Length: 99
Image (cartoon, rainbow, N blue to C red):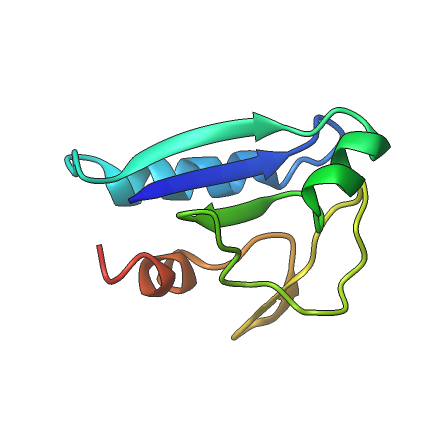
């Protein structure tokens, strides 16, 4: 399974997700983490970037909302504790299949 972490440098939340994902996939050679820097608004538009951080699992965004805007912005996730800049570790574990 390939996990892609899409981000842009202006958003501080991607490092939280990177840390969570790194912990979750540690010792799992069947899971790989790839980082993708989204550097321009044009690139964001071209790839359908819905904000930083975005997590793709085998190319699919499991947290996507169909009408979410595309662009260089920090993304908000619905978590059990309310809106946050990153999904919880439990939410990530769920989309990765209880790794």
